[in-house]
Structures are given as structure tokens and as C-alpha cells.
Image (cartoon, rainbow, N blue to C red; front, top):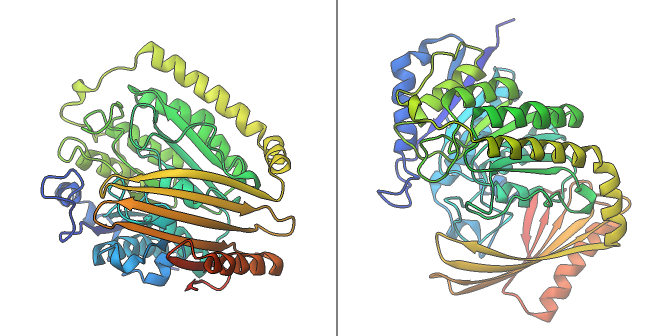
Length: 440
């Protein structure tokens, strides 16, 4: 039998996509990394293999997203290739051509929610979520863990899997009281049937490698061991670095490499990271070496002396965060039962969501049926104002995987009822059993 290559790499710098020429989310984010990889001779190593991205289809995207008015009017071909790059990484792992894979692709995705009206936080579609649902559809994967290591809370990924008990979403990030998008607090734990499978770990500004690895060793890794996922995805943001211009953390390339070494994610997908010259080449090389099982100890930034030490107040705060997180996880079944009992047949929330790239304000009403026989269904009423798009609205029902016939019928009936009332412009059913997004 042929030996399995240890690590697959997928690159897609998206030369034809940029928010602006000087925006921090631009193609140089990956070009400096690729130059460093070539300079270090990593592509010549037998334990590293490069793959080309594939192109995702709109069906792949609509397995996750509901675009208003539609996704075709909201994205570019670069988004299809970015999602396809992550899918190519998934294929390489699932076909056992490599043990692990790292998709270094852009545009990024973890701020993109289930409903899409435009771009927020540099994201329009959610690359990891599309890859996860592709894994489920193509390879029958059920239990998935996503560990989001970006400095910003992965609010889009959280939104997409908030009602999914088979997806464990863990996000550590700089405290949302100090950084975009202002979410990711410990009380955001999932809707009742999935309560406890959303884990938010808001860290204080100034957290260093020491604090991060305390959280990893004593909270994240034990939770992963208890959950026993079939596959682990790393939403690999690198903007916790001490030199990143958009945040206030103090993680080094060594800190990231040791994180990758301990986490042993099956697939990593690039997210943020905007210190293009001082951080990304070193952080990415460290992660690549760690994922390939190679020695990463000599990957050190030239200006490492500028990394601040961790204040004692931050260290103490992190100890408290770990203790509280351990307690919540140990009580998760009790908390879930209480959440289900308190909700009754339906659980409802109303939210206001802001699309910073387009100046769009969205108001969303979400309602989930808590079915005793299946994962139920949810309905979403969404209205958006602002930007150059004027007013947009839609009502959608999402039929969960394995939904019982009663829930399937109730979901469709809810859309027909809303259409008869005529409040919204568009009416849709996202049917995960039939793998289709229908316009009613």
C-alpha cells in the first residue's frame, strides 16, 4: 500500500477579489506565505503535497445559505473557488490521500450567517460551513467539531450550527466587549435541543501563548475528548498575533504551531490574519510544519522581542474563564433539559444584524420547533434596509436532516401561510433531506 502523505495544502490567493487595494483583506496575505514556503523548500518535502482548488456549485452553497434575493447576485467566482478549495482539502483527507489538509484560501467566511444579504466582516459565504455540509452529504460524516481560533468571534459559523446538536462549535477570541463583532459570550450556548454544543471562550486583550495554551489544555481538549467528533475542523484565523493591526492579543508563531500540534485538526481553513509581513509567513509555516508532523521549533519572528508579556490580571482572568467553562460543560445535560423544558414547543429569538461592508441593517425573527421525534425545523423572517440595496425581505423554512414527516409538512405550511399574508418579498424552503433550496 502506498504511504499516505501527511499534509495536503490548497492555495487560492484570489487575485481578482479585493474589498479595496489597500484593505487588509487582500491577496498579499497569501503571497508572502507562499514565498516563505518556497524559500524554505516545504513543497520539496515528501510529507507535504499541494492540491488545486475545485469550484463549488451553487447547490453546495445553498446547502448552507439562503441568499436574499439570491446568492448569484451577492458573490463572485472567487467565492466559489475559495469554498471549493476547502472542499478539495476535505476530499484529500476523506480519500486518505493525506492525513490532514490546510486550505489557505480567500475570501474568508466565518462571519457569514445562514441568511446572506451582503458582506459582513469581510465574509459573504461561510467556507467552513459549506465544507462541513459537503462532508456530510458526500461522505456521511455526522459528528463534527469546529474550533475557531480567529481573534474575532465566529458569529456566522455559530449562527449556522446554533440548532445542530451534531456540531460542536468552539470559539476562543478577544472579548466581544473590546472587538468586532461584539458577540461570543459564554451565555451563547445553542438553542434548547443543541444547548451546550456552542462553546464561547472570550479572552481578555493581552492574552499570550501561556494563557492560550492553558485554555487549550484544560478546557478545549477535554471538551473535544468528551464530544468524540468524527472529524475536527480548525477555522484558522491568525489575527491573535502580537503584531496584528486589528486586535490586541499577544500570540506568537510558536504559540500557533503548538496549538496546531496539540489540536491535530483533520482540516484547517484559513480565516483572518492581517499582519502580512511580520506574522503570516511565520505563523503559516509553523502551522504547516506542525500539521505535517515536522519540527517547527525554529520558526521564530525576527521581532519576537516586541511581543509583550502577559499581565498577571490577564492570567488570573483566564484561570477564572477555564474554571467557569469546565463547570458549564459538566452541567451541559442538565442545562439542556432545563432549556428544552422552559421553551415548550417553539423557541424564538429576535436579532438585529449589521453588514458593515454595505451599511445594511437586518432584523431577523427565528423560530425553532422542538420536536420529540426529530431535530425539528426552523423558520426565519428577515427584513433588511440600507446600503445600495434598498429594502429586501424573505421568509424561509429550514427542514433539518432526518426531520419527521410532521415537521416537514409544518415547515412547508408555515411558508405557504406567510406567503398568503404577503408581508415578505421572497419565500423559500431549504430542505436538507432533499438537498435543495426551493423558491415558493
